[in-house]
Image 1 (cartoon, rainbow, N blue to C red):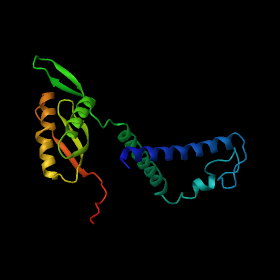
Image 2 (cartoon, helix red, strand yellow):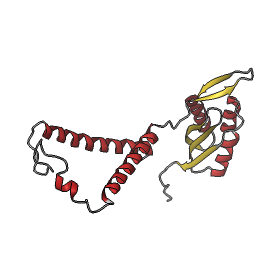
Image 3 (cartoon, rainbow, N blue to C red):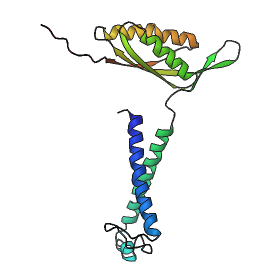
Image 4 (cartoon, rainbow, N blue to C red):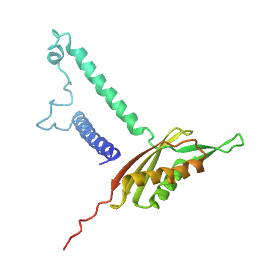
Length: 193
């Protein structure tokens, strides 16, 4: 499962748990009878009784530790939210038109052109390309699924000298650093008789 799918599953689980707990608290608060496993007895019950609040009064470390733990949980949740909402793809690339102006090239257009050009390469069954980085200095991340009879070093050299070079030249960029992940197409074993 990719990290995007994992994030969606975790967000859905956390959301369902919070929705169930919030709905149960609301129902009990509005007068519904609490279930047998419920922590409190009714709508006028407090979250922490006086005895529960003062039980740790002798331990000076207790409340700072609780507050520190909650702060760490909050910061981790905030970091997760920022990581989920952050853009992972480059939306636009600035192309120097050599007349003092710059034109915008959609990142997805260059990604799809580079992926299609790579798929035409000998020995490549499928390819996928994602552009990241800055608008003036993009980087490429490519996934190539190779046919069983192609040498990976040949496929990598052909990709760097062919589709990647053409994409760099057509966008007028000085360089496009690339991270390439190679895989193979799964195929059934051939029977020998």
